[in-house]
Every structure is written in C-alpha cells, then in structure tokens.
Image 1 (cartoon, rainbow, N blue to C red):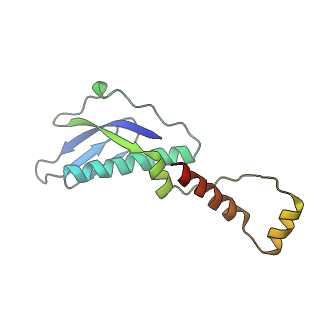
Image 2 (image 1 turned 90 degrees about the horizontal axis):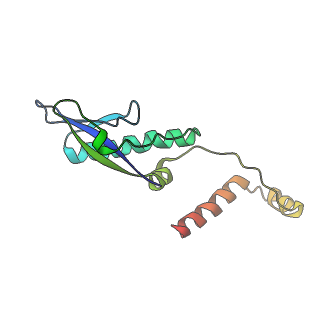
Image 3 (image 1 turned 90 degrees about the vertical axis):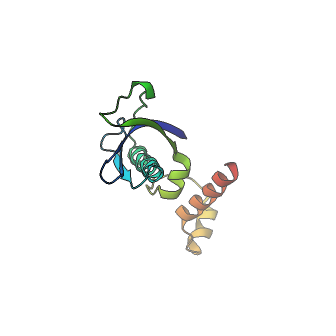
Length: 133
C-alpha cells in the first residue's frame, strides 16, 4: 500500500536543522540536520505512525489535499511518500492469531516432530508474499 501525506517543514535559523510535522497524523513530529535527513526521518515517523494504527485495527486518516495545508510562518509544505508494504515487512511485529484446520494424521506427524505450526505457516505465507511482489 502506497500512501502520501503533506508535511510542514520548518528550518531553525540558528542551527539550520529542520522540524517536520505531519498534520494529518496527530503527534507525528520529527526532524533532521539537513533537508534530506528530515525528509527520511519524516517518512519513517509517518510510516511508523500508520503501521501502529493498522496493527491496532484502527483506520488511518485520509490525507488532506496538499493545497489545503497552510504551514506556520517560515515553513513550507511538501508531500511524503510512504511505502507501507516495505515498512511493515521491515518493522511490523504485531502477531495475529489464526485458527486453521488440518487432517488429524498430519497433526500427529507434526506434533511428534515438535514442529512449530505458527512458524511453518508464517514461513510459507512469507515465501508466497515474496514471490508475488
């Protein structure tokens, strides 16, 4: 899933550092020593914010049209591009319980060999996901 959110950038006149705020994601504020660093940090912070919401089963807020975002004095607006699939693959860690049914003979076979059913299912689905992307 690809998302984009407008962000407000502010440069500190004394240090040259940037602060970045993503208005659509409450509390999502970060920064960086340079503009490229600030952009990367903002994309990471926004992706983490969205992933937390998704893992908690909450809806993510829609992005405000960029032309509707007005920064405070001295700031400017730019758009952040979020690749949620890549971010979730790298940083996602919420586990979801799934119930599945398998033949009794296969269950006996697997239990006798102390096979971790969750690991087998996760490994298999991960391989399918990687083959599909």
